[in-house]
Length: 359
Figure 1 (cartoon, rainbow, N blue to C red):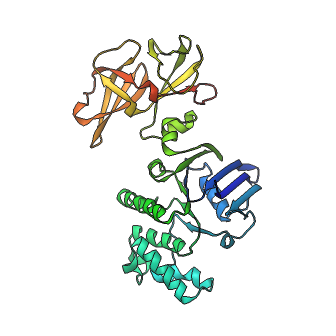
Figure 2: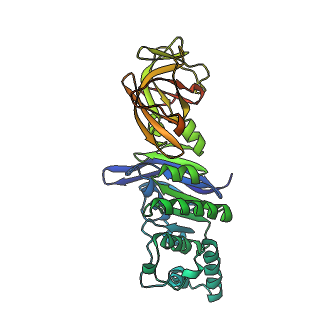
Figure 3: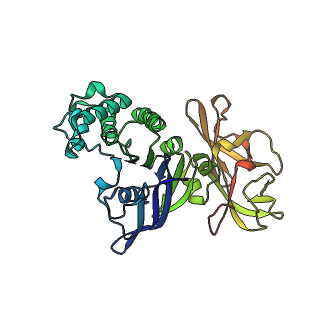
């Protein structure tokens, strides 16, 4: 596999504070990788290191088989799109698109060709003679993407490009960016704290915490088989339900208070006898039913019904633990109803209480 970007043993310190810690990441040619995590996890810092906007303390950065660790941003062959758009307000859209190309002394015909191509791809042709102040937020972000696009580079870096937009525009531009990647097949690294963006856009997601990549995998792998408790809790809206208990019956069951749940069908791996553990199950992998099934259901009481349009989110109390379950709107139970929750064990996750790693 050809790597478009290779990060090798990268460490970044700000004084005595270690922000990125011995980090390694390979991005394949034409791959769309999303750096996802909470504020302060180091995702934008890592992107700025790739772009050359921050000098690293240790390690190497390779782009297109060239060591660019100490190269200037302009020498790295990247196009960057910022959260703040970073457009020149006194220039027209055409001026913003052509400014960097003129500085690079490209021929006029080549500049016009690139502007025409970017305008056609991003559908900003009618906006070329307007200034940024006369554009909507979504139009400005298209222009910002266009300014990176006209550089005709192989690698694009996006730093939370949609976070300033309203929900509808974010959804529309998310589709546009996915379409753009499909059409260009360029390597893209995209920073966001929005898990929906990550799950819908990425070929692979790198989930970060405290300057360390916790898991790097395809979206469905991250969602269905989170490597640890942090990833499981961070991915999913609402979060995965967590039940604290222990394994029993030679690892074939999970004891949750007085309730014992059969673990037959669990695909995680060998579960040890009588070890403290946490059973994680997503709201859509749990079914509400009226009758109990020994070894397969958990008694619970409905507390809140939260209609969400196509389905409803039901919040329940199960032996002191709060749980949420997705149900069809027409089947949502009333608050106060005593019910039983049937967990889809093959789709569940079990975590070791001490290490917080998935078993």
